[in-house]
Length: 272
Ligand code: MG
Ligand code: MG
Image (cartoon, rainbow, N blue to C red):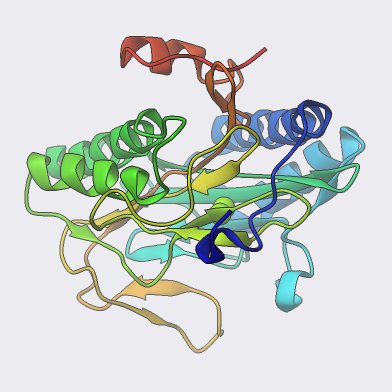
């Protein structure tokens, strides 16, 4: 193991099973929040649904109290990219809402996010969401045993750049995940392939492209959390936590383990 691989936590099969339990709590919680998103609902109400779902499953919300974060989800609307704080804001038709959620089961973490359009939105916005979600899957599909972490980064960027003139946020990245929500290595959403730690059995990563209709540049609001685009362009954010097993990728936060999408993309499914 080389210097750059230091600090990368490699999980046993039993530990990955525990991470799958955490991932399923996250996946099921996100589906409950998704079902509740509608005009007239506040982001605080969505947060309450998420916290009930996580605690009801016997898990712990990992975001709550993380560096002082006051909620169990991040809810980021329109030009907010990530880390929006749930509160009084009421969702309206035509908004684009990103929900990010994390849970801990027996000390193991899961982390995932999605973005959804509320009612009818312009075609370019609907397309932004499709492109961002697909780039996440292209990134996971590029994670092959024997490769390197930035093979994922390169696949995300290559897909997004091939779809049009989008901004790919560089200030925030995916990450290793396991006994902590954020671990080495970082997983950028751009860059050359073949760099970073090796992709080996037992590695678990969260991949999370953040893509905008304009600039890649972002700033943090005065609440010290909410990340917004510098030009006010709207953004999308999709995330899954996945692990590599001897058979391939296992998407721990996808309800089907990622099997359907990975098979569509023609890559091995490593779940069980
Ligand atoms: Mg997340
Ligand atoms: Mg994450």
